Structures are given as structure tokens and as C-alpha cells.
Image (cartoon, rainbow, N blue to C red; front, side, top):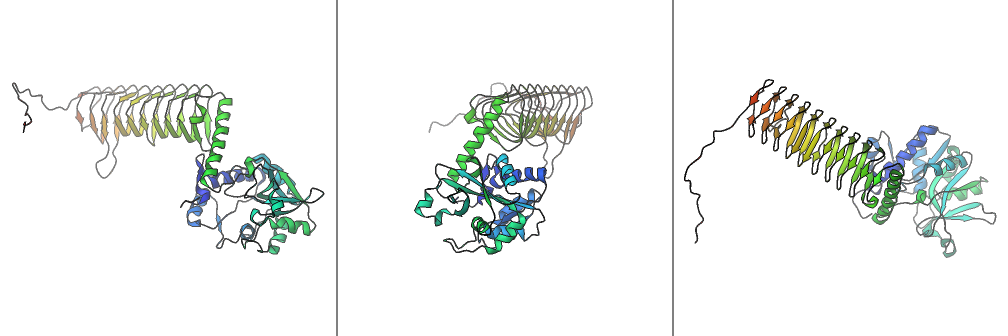
Length: 442
């Protein structure tokens, strides 16, 4: 990959390659039971924390002596499951349906997921005898010229009884160009021991691996195309599909929603019905209610927006923000860790942080909640039916009760009782005949 990031931690459609594989494995575990073991070697100091963040335990391979050696280390963990399925962290798009067939075929004998591809370069070739039975797998580097012409490839994904793996693995040898213990040699060993080897044809997508950033980009294009098509078939209007990016596995969007060009949706995303997501908007961990309009170039991160709301253009909702139904947040406004009550409006050039705003509140242009004192964040509380004049500074901690009005340009440092008008301005002075300084002509 020519990168300091381990290959399996490179992102594909918003999720590390390894995450895609673990998610499909977890799906199988939920259906059939069992245990996930992730064998790590190179850059385990970076990979292991990610595995642990998913609630799994990494099994370390101190020397990278091949795939057969890696499986042996996993099986040394005293697995009690009847059957073992082998997956790879850099083959992220294996299909669940293909794995179901593979597990069925590998319940009593050795089963291999294969595929026929137009360009088999780099893959191990499936060797069959005159009866079309699989007798061996030859790695690309060890293949003869005739074997290189074979288009049926080995995916490296296997299923077999655990007892059969335990029988075959100790017999592996490393007499090959890489000096490694190839798991592929289990096929020939299985045949020699009189065991049947079954080839299960899989889709081209299932066997695609990632060895460089070009292949990663190709897979990303495939995933994005599939996700876009699925959304459009479910009644979602992608105005320019090729410019919409859908990242992560949890994306739920209601019908009649319109997504304009250059939009990025990053899981988890829950969007209601008849919503508009405007041009250039970027949503991450967002929940949006029905009939809401997100105007162009709006950023939403870890925030919730109610129904019939309007946000943007050029607005930013930061983590911890909740906008209730029928709220308005306008251009060049930033909201952070705040609750904005139903029907309230923050329409222009404002910063609202660590704040609770009640119902039917109007926040004037240029209003700032001064929530940070240099050491800690402080809370602003605004009641219902409050009118905040333009260019007001609310110095937290401060509370404005129901029905309060503040004059434009005020700096509010003390609590304001219900129904009061709060003003804090210096007296205006007019100097008659004032002459501005002029620049020297020199």
C-alpha cells in the first residue's frame, strides 16, 4: 500500500477493510453461533486496538510464516467449534450468500470459495483433474506457464471441519518460493488423505482483495454504486448519484427524500421522509425528522434535528446538538451541545454553545453565548418566548427566564427575571464637527 497505515485499517466506504470482514463474520455468528478469532502480525500495535474496540480479542502471530501458520495459531486457542471458516482482512466484500453455501459444503469436508475472473494475475489457481475434481491450488508465484493460463482462482476463503484442519495443518511444509506455510496446500493434503475437496463458485466481488490504493479505490466505487442504487430503488432521489457518498453500514433514509449533489452521509444516519439534503452538505452520526430541509453546505455531526426544521445554508451543528421540531438555524451559525426548543430560530451569524433554549425563541443576528471562561464550559439557559436582540453577548453561567427581551448590543452577565427587558449599552456620544485624521501625502 506504500503507507504507514496497516492495509486492513485503510477505509473502504467509511469503514476499515477489517471492519467489513468482522461485520460479515459477526452476522454468521449471530445465525450459527461460534467464536471470532482475528490473527494479527504486522503492525499489530495499530491493528489490535481496533479489534479490541469491537469487543474482540486479537491472536498475535509473532512471525509471519504464512496463512497456514496463522490458522494454526488460531486453532491453538483451543477452539471447540465443529467447523472453521477462514476469512481475510483484505478481502472485504465477500457475500453472505456465498459464505452460506461454503459453510454448507464444508460441513463434512474441505470446501474452497472459487471464482472465474478475466484477469487472474496474483491469485492462486485451482487445479482440477480429468474428472473436474479439485486436486490442488498453486500460488501465482509458483505456477507454471500453463497453470497461469487457468482463470479459476482461489479466494483463500475456506470452510472445513475443525478436526480436519487440525489433521492437515501439522503436515504443511514451507518448500516454496516464499518459504511460508501455505494454507492452500491443505487442498492437496486433503486429497492425498482421501478427503473430498469441494469448490463453491462465488461472485467476482466476493473474492476481490486489496493490495494497493488503486484496488481500494476500485472497490470503493463498487460499494458506492451498490449503495446508491439501493437508495434510489427504495424511493430516494439522488439528483446526481455519482457525487453522493454513503459511508458506513447504518444508513436509513425515508422515501421521497431528495439528496442533492456533492453530499456525504457517514454512518450512523437516520433520515425521515420527504427530507431535502442540500448541495455540498456533510452529515455524520445524524438523525433528521420528516419534512426537514438541510440547505447547501451544512455540516452536521452527532446531532439530532426534528421534523419541519430548516438548517443552513453554511450552518454547523456540532456534537450534542438537538434541534426540536419546526426550528430554524440559518447561515453561518454554529450550535454545539445545545437544545433548541420547538419553533425557535437562530437565523444569522450566531454561536450557541452549552445552551438550553425554550420554545418560540428568536435569537438575533450576531448573538454569542460566551460559554468558556478559560478553564471550563458554563451553561446558558433561555426560557420560552424570549427575544434576543442582535449582537447580544450572553456571558455564562446565566439564565434568561420566560418572556425576556434583550436590547441589541447588550452584554448580559446577570440572570434576567421573567418578562423583563435587559439592556447593557454605553451611552452614545456625538462629537460635532469631528475631523478624521488624513494620511500624509509624503
